[in-house]
Length: 145
Image (tube, rainbow, N blue to C red):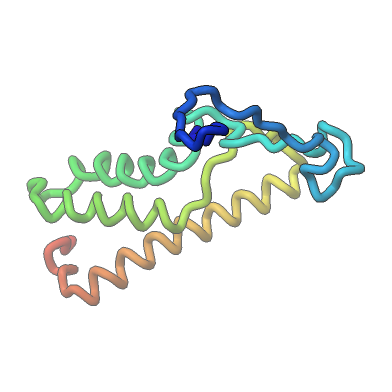
């Protein structure tokens, strides 16, 4: 900090000024709220590996299903199947909802709704892959004959 003494000389001092913070009650717009209500938790409640597992397990299952079906086809695996696997992974990641591993099983009606939503999501992934394949005219590469 720069100071000017009585003789007019400028002196540099290294002592920082004392910083005063306002009282806790005046910091928040909700000063009447309790401290627990003012607390903000930063980040996610889930750990990083659990978050990755929740978000990528279903898309990985789509690619794994494709890879398990490859030995049953009569064509050798080529780069077109790698492109198909990548496309399936990306589309499934966008369409399929994350897996909720922490939620407990609910009623039969809730399970039925979950199953129908999951079936609709998988059919959407399949439909998007077929539509993109038709638009790019690559469906003959995957013919069944």
